[in-house]
Length: 622
Image 1 (cartoon, helix red, strand yellow):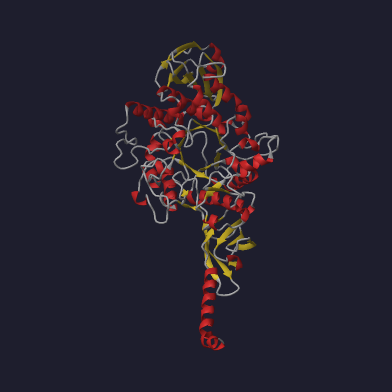
Image 2 (cartoon, helix red, strand yellow; image 1 turned 135 degrees about the horizontal axis):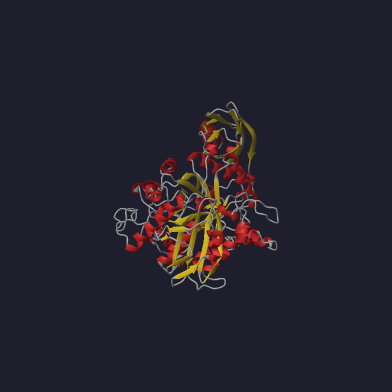
């Protein structure tokens, strides 16, 4: 045996050295660093880098770049991760910083990390405001501008337009091709459902099962394509609102195969779904077990729940959102499942956002039924527990439900038109009612046209309300052409393809070919309404005063010192005529008016006639 060992010892030693060399080589390979690059001139001078590579924690990192220093190195339970906290001094110049990683054995590894120059005026960008009208679309279902990217190498979810819940091939190029349509319809802001990579087996066309927070899904395009889309949108007079998710991510993310830390996500002995009871978070009597299940339960089996109480997770997410704002030049963020993330973390996120971009806008999805619950999450609300979210805008879910019910009910003490009045009467709860986004449906609900019994007149009344009440309106793509869909049939049916977005579509809503008479008329109605709203100072900047509905007729005014608009909604199957003495305080100084919808002129305002199931928008003249 010893003779055999002596004969083969050189070979064995050589093999050992070779294998050690492989091990060192593996250890010295960096798979990724996130954020992938950063900028000089940011208000926050600290920068957390997450370095990922086999056994990277065995290295000793250093940096040699003027103005850039390492403040702290954090090694975590998983040796394949290393967190480096850098200090980027105010006078640091843009360039390529050499990050060096020295290992106990082998050669050091040098990684060139880009520090870019911050764009001029970036910090002063303006977000969305009351002058905007938001158009919401789902990129996979809007238009297929590049069929070549329908299926991409390495992406497991394949395109299948015949499957309502499958991927259909819409992409960023398709949106870019039709920005003129969106702007031409009178919209000024574009909310696009998530465009992040979602490489999961379960159909992920919706974009909420994120597998890479720094990459656009290649079936939609590239990061540069997204930036180009934002730039072109701006040239078309459109702001862009990016849909983001902090609560969860897709199970196809590399984290799930190799978690940085056990508490990177909220883990349970067995799969535990959230109870979706966001009200427990504001309920002073709620059980801790119910709160934990709400916050830490998973959204779905393929969506792991991030633990934002871990400071490394928290900083990762904050930096990610700032990275997208700076890289792509977006104007706002819509944050998905806002209350589902740890609330103190979310408040810190808002502070960091406004530190870098004081005028930037964020709207949170606070999907709750009552104004009291929604108001809690708007900034500066007078919460008894002292919590301040610092969140700019909230969606008006209570008004959404009221709109879907009021026009389908008989008018009573608290039903029909009275329900609209009562819902808006709770505006005293909001710190700023003007920072509320009104909507009738979105990608998670029955199409509003279905909800209203596919009655065009009712839809028009709902759209008038959404466009003229306080705050700013959001319209879901396809509402303008009477698209239908029931949520209980499956989400794919409320997210159908926009006609004309695919070659050989028999109907093309972009140019009107093939639309029915009702569809074309509704499209024209929405276009007229949105273009008029853009020019109405009373609606954009004015106050709201409304009057208790009588006999199913709801009257309210939007007004400034110089301008006033009277909105009349007749929620009856019969026409109504009424005298206007009770509105004297709002009509004082005005003698005539013009209905901007029907172009009807009122040479006196003593009696107003409104056809059945109709809304009037009357511009008042002195």
